[in-house]
Image (cartoon, rainbow, N blue to C red; front, top):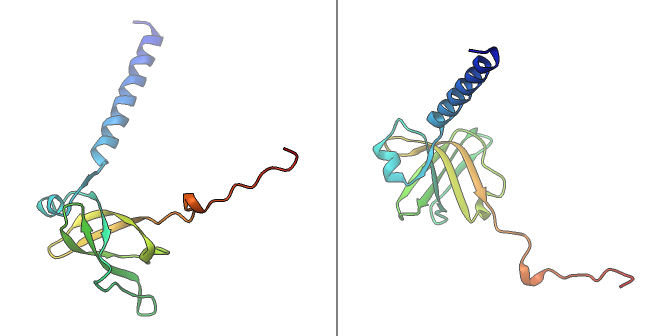
Length: 133
């Protein structure tokens, strides 16, 4: 075999190894029931903040404890605990994505991603004509 063929085969083997290693670490979007059934796996759970239940966050007492209730897309509600600070404008979020693992009585979130309402409402955006036209 030529030297270029050996280098090409080695590069392909490295590329396959990288793809397989990242595929094993990826998590999937699921609901709370799937996360509860597989407590050792990490999942992304999409849901809505349950506003009538209290959020627990006291930055003076413990700035790295934030708890709230989330309803997933299957209408199952579960307590979520995040060992970090509360995201800015969390109460205004339309949709929440939590990344973590399910425990016995709560979901332990390593990350919280929020989708806040747009500050631009389509009907309220005024188009200003450019001068000179």
